[in-house]
Structures are given as C-alpha cells and as structure tokens.
Length: 413
Ligand SMILES: [Mg+2]
Image 1 (cartoon, rainbow, N blue to C red):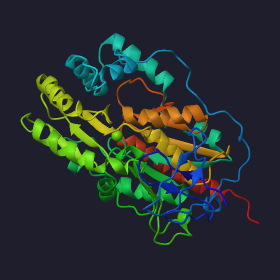
Image 2 (image 1 turned 180 degrees about the horizontal axis):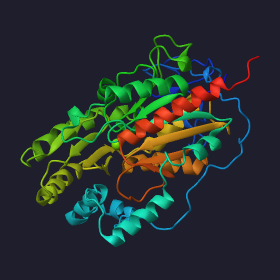
Image 3 (image 1 turned 30 degrees about the vertical axis):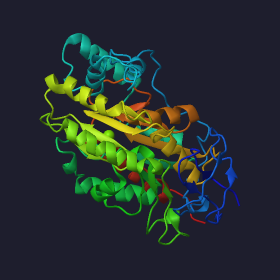
C-alpha cells in the first residue's frame, strides 16, 4: 500500500490522493513524501475524498520495439520569437513592485499576437519557427514510433485547443465532432482536460464523464465519475484534489472588486473561475489596456498572496502557491500509477502561456512531448505545433485510428 500523492502546501487545506487501495482515515495527520520534487508536508485532516486509480486498469501497448527510441525533436535553435523576453515581462508584472503600467501593457501585447505575419522577413522567421516546432500532423509517424511500448496519456487544454477562441467566453462551445473525437480518444487513452476555467464550467462545455478534469489551472482536479476503465474500482467516487481551497473566500472577494473596478471599461469581462479570476480584454480597445491594467493592479496590490499571469487576451489572477498546469500534469500521472515509470508517454496540447508550465514539465521529465496550438510563432517549450482546433481534432482522430490499428495488429493468443 503506498501513497501516490498526498498534498501539499503547508497551511492550506486538505488535499490528498491515494492509490493502490490505500485509504486514509479522516481527521488524522500524516506525513508523506509525495512528489519526488516536493518536500514532505504535514497533511491537515482531509475533507474531500477520493481515489483509486491503478495501473492495472491502464491499457499498455504491447509493442516493445522502439521503447528506448528518443522522441523526435525538432532541431534546437536558440532564442524565441516574441521580441519581448517572457522572463523580463513577467518580472515586470510583480504586482507590488511599483513597475510601470506600460510593462503590463507590453506583456499583454506579447501574450496576444493577433496579426498575420506577411512581410518577407517575418515569413522567413515563421518558416524558421516551423522548423523548430514542426506540425504534429506532419510528424505523426515519427511521434508514434517514439511512443511504441509506452502508455500514451493525453492532456488537453480547452479554450483555443478544443474550442475556437471567441469574444464571449461563455460561448466557447466545442463542436459535436470534436466531442465525438475526444470521446473516442478517451476510450483509447487516459485523457484529461487541463484548463484555467472553472472545472464545472468546462465540464458543461465538454460533457464527457469519462475524462479527468483539472480546472482553475490545475487547482481543482476531478477524475472520471463513471464508465471509466481507468477508475473501475471507485464507482461513484472520483479523484478530487484542491490545493488552494483556503483561497476561495479571497478569490470570491477579489472577483467582486475587479468586477466593480473594470465595469467602466467597455468590453472588459471578469470571470470567476473558482480558484482564480480571469479578466478578459479580447473586446477592449487597445487604447484602454493601460487603464484596465491600472485598475487590476490597484485591486491586486492589497492581496500579496495572489499573483498574476497571462493568457491570450486574458489576465489571470490566482493564489501564489507553487501549483500550475505542469504540477497538475505530474499529479495526474502519479495518480494513474506512473510516478517513476519509463513506459509512459504523456502528450499535452495547449495554446497559451499557462500551458508552457506543462510543456516544460514534459521536457524536464524527458517524457512525451508538448504541442502548441498557434498560427503564429511564439516562444515555447513545446516540441511540435498545430495551427488551430481543427488540426487538433485531426491529430486526435489519427491517434484513435493508430490505436485501433495497433490493437488489430496484435497477435491473438
Ligand atoms: Mg487555451
């Protein structure tokens, strides 16, 4: 009986995940060594329950050839594409550091490229970027060769990956054909949605109970609730992991304050994503971005325990705990029993900066690969690229067909 993952953040509330039949009694204090890169933490009594995902429930491809074959990587070319250094911009965004609002606005522009590259030199740069991050569709065979003998686990961002980016975040619906494809995908591989959105909201968009959902940038994780071969032994119970639950009242308050503050800015939209707040500026005139940044900053300076990050036309306010989409990916892999396995092949597909934490985690682990969804060159740790959700759907469909084909090709015993 071993604890796969227990959690975290000393002083925050109750989170735990267990595996291989382990169950913990409520209201006990236990010290675990959870993730390899986390120190042990004293667990507080848990209030939510959970879990059992065992590796024997996972279908493992039996083909052994190519197990140690390296993942095909595009040629390494130093340097990024977006001219403003990401590290520098993020440093400038420290909320209480007194930085110029212009730095915020620069960063907002850098996070939200919108203009097609058309001049000869930009075209050249685009071609150079594609060489470094080739299309995952063009590289499909090579990618599959690298995955042979390993369990593919799929991680999918939602907005801009499974659904098109739209002006109204409440109307970011995914198509029926995408839903069908993701449903088939989940029959072939463990599949998780990892999003900045509130988990309930993204579930209402996706409506597939057989998936894992990591909402609020991974701060709200739930496993399949029914009909999942990966969660057979937990009828009616699912993984639930919320490492930032103590921040809920603060987030709620900040949400209302931000709503009040940015109300006067036409097009601005504040979204409560439970463990984080999103300020959308997709419909805000660029001339008003500075005013918007000022308003957001004026609220956040009173909340040093919150931090700000950026996505595509969105400012994200979240608890300053060491938790992000990369940690969520690692947590889910551990929950599935792949804590120290070499035979797992995680694939993460996402379209914005917050997905970079997951891409980087895969690079650091030396497992699987990341795919950035973008029509424009961006500074990224992802290995491959796809241009838009339609290409994501094509890639997922090919994965399903590849899996079905490999099952048909297996020798009968
Ligand atoms: Mg996205």
